[in-house]
Amino acid sequence: MSKISAFFERLFRNSLFLKILSVIIAIGIWLYIVNVADPRRSEEYTNVPISFVYEGTVPYNNSLMPLVTSRSFFVNLRVSGPRTSLMNYSKDKISASLNFNSVAAEGIYEVPISISLGDDSLTYEILGSDSITLEFVKKSSTTLRVDVKSSGTFKTGYSVVEQTVSPETITVEGPKSVVDTISFAEVLIDVTNAEKNIVESGDILLLTSDRAYVDRTYLSLSPSQATVSVALQYRKSVKISTSLLNPYGGDETPYATVSYSPSPYLQLQGEEDVLSYIDTYNIGSINLAEVTDSKKTFDFTVQNQSGIEVVSDSKTVTVTVDLGNAETKTFRLSSANLQNASFLNVPEGKVARITDLYKVITLRAQDYTLAEIFPDSFRLSVDLSSVPNENGEYQLKVELPSGVYGGFMNRYYVNVAIEDVQ
Image (cartoon, rainbow, N blue to C red; front, top):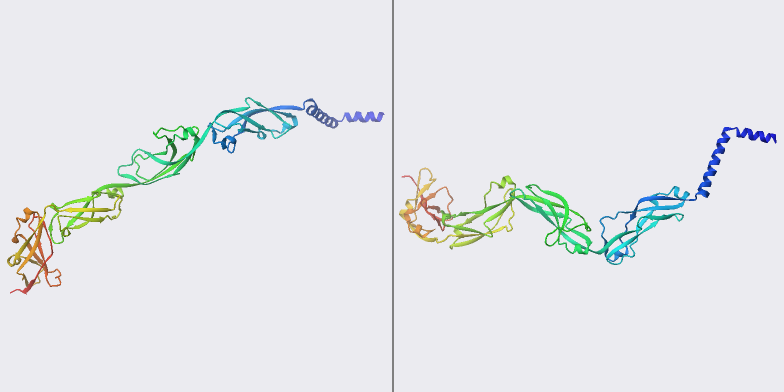
């Protein structure tokens, strides 16, 4: 017996043994407290997010929508259960959601909050209201074309040659009472003094038929922004001009009236520093000899020029030439008149003379001009360097006195004898 007592005496004097014994006793006491003295406990969890899954629910399928500006809702809970179950428990394991099954028509509802803890040994108590008050209304949607509205004005002379908006259409969804008032969708861009291409994004605005802005609080847009691309070019409106020519001689421009249809102006496009120097645009020449009556029209297809593009709606211009009261008169030039003709480029050592006995020419001019013209009023000349016609005749150039206006109706040829100087 004395040996046993001595053994225990030595054992209890051993510090290592005492330490081990203390740990064992502590564990025992802890196990007793956890499992016997206090088997249950509670924890509070705040701001637990409530899942707002609405698609596919009863009201969603009945074309109802809740009037909410945010789907972020939270709930506070007290969770109770065995201490061992709560030791490793956290807020992430709590599943909170709204139960919409009782919502079947428009109105205000107390939507209950459903809680799942994921552990059958735990129970919960909602701290505060166990439901959320929501109003439900009829839902509607519409598809609208996106228009572009600009503020300000482009730099003088610049205009839009191409404009695109992306997206071209949007879908708006929300309360039917609001959606039914929407007539326009617009994106606003600032073009003040713009002279270069514009690419700008902005919010899409919704407007009523009388152009009042629509409250978008409960509306959803898909998408909500649009990108506008605007291509600019310098454009200038200039007068049309034509060249009036009579290949047979004379000048009829003072009494010729020219009109243009559909407009006397053309819209040109190009670089500003090029177009700034252009005031008229010549579309071609008109042969006045083809105007056999007092008036005639000519059709021109307007062509672009280097660095200049014609952007008028119509590229065809109808030109009407009106010679007013111009009349024609025939004159008989006698041999004496013809002998007064001058010669150009006569070969050296030669002389030239017209051998025709007479020549009949026709002149078109105003009646008061024709009354003052006589056969000896014309200046006649022949250029011997010109190519004779098939009959060997040289062209006779007939000119009116300076300041007298009219046009000859044909080209005239004469026979010329070229002889040695006597």
